Image (cartoon, rainbow, N blue to C red; front, side, top):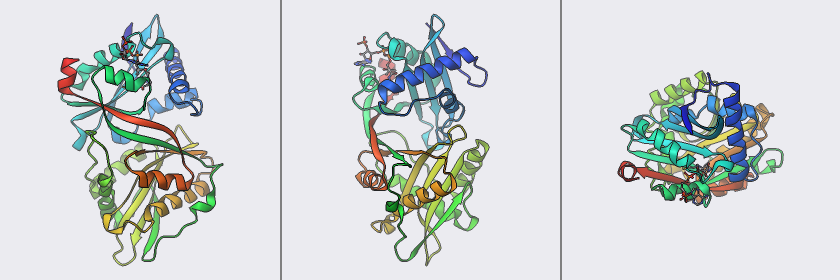
Amino acid sequence: MEIEPLDPASAGRSVLEGVHEVVSAADRLDKPGAPPVTFETAIGRLENPQPSLGRVLRWVARRDGRVVGLAALYFPEAENSHLAILELTVHPDARRDRVGTAVLRALTPELHERTVLECWNVTKGGAGAAFGTALGFEVVDETVFQALSIGAADRSAWKVSPAAGYRLRTWQDSAPEELVASYAQARRAIADSPFGRSAYRFPRWTADRVRESEADRRRRGIDHRVVAVVQRDSGRVVGFTELQLYPHRHDLGYQGDTAVLAAHRGRGLGFCVKAAMLRRLVAERPEVEEVITSTAAANPYMVNVNLALGYRTTRETVILAQNKLARGRA
Ligand SMILES: CC(C)(COP(=O)(O)OP(=O)(O)OC[C@H]1O[C@@H](n2cnc3c(N)ncnc32)[C@H](O)[C@@H]1OP(=O)(O)O)[C@@H](O)C(=O)NCCC(=O)NCCS
């Protein structure tokens, strides 16, 4: 078996077709009910990685020329420079034949100073969880995947106004200058949400970091939308929600962070900003068919907000983690 670096920009068509075949066959098995993955979507995902996860290295495993496995290693920055995040997928026909183990061994030297290796979005009770346990990973958190089908949703649930004393403000790509400082402050409130024992640290947002991340998304062609709730008296952002649309997926929205500062909770503001986001999305991007999101299972408030908005839970997932000491022993 050969394990080689993969650069989607220079890879030949046959390798990319092999990548698509692995992703679509694995999804059929590991994510039943998920829509089929087209070639454009599979390759678009490689070309448009999630900005917050930092630099990415990719590999393919080939046996007799056929792509049987794929891996991506992400290197998030700043407060997460101790962490690497792994995506590893083996074609269902090639499983239980040590392909996954071999790929993991081959990429381990690239971890260098990263002390914790985590796998996110691993289907609970599935092959990935069993593989992780066998290779010395432990489950450090549980998450819930939810999807909202725009066509099937009852949009009347989205018709809500903010509580007295608050107003909504929406923007695309770039926060208004007068709100960027309080928006950064409100973004920090996401750190109150549970993240189990994962080694991931929520960013300590500042106005400068907001501007950097906006510029990065613009460079990547990502349509990033925010609905913020502003306290009328102070003129400050006290809560927000964000949604992203990637250039390779015009039909799919990624619902990202939602947070409300502690002093303003219990007034339905979280529901209100998410509902306003959906109203705006259907008005401005009618081609979007589905919105997906992931939430900590230990956050029933947000899971229930999503259900009330029309999301359904599609998958229960876990986060697996392995620290350097355990890797040394493996
Ligand atoms: C997880 C995955 C990459 C494993 O690939 P693989 O090539 O089949 O794994 P290996 O053959 O190297 O398995 C090594 C050991 O893990 C354990 N294991 C792997 N899959 C298992 C399963 N379905 N059930 C029970 N144990 C399993 C076994 O102990 C296995 O050794 P054994 O076959 O000698 O008993 C593959 O199942 C996959 O692509 N799953 C979907 C994506 C995913 O969940 N990735 C998360 C990875 S952390």
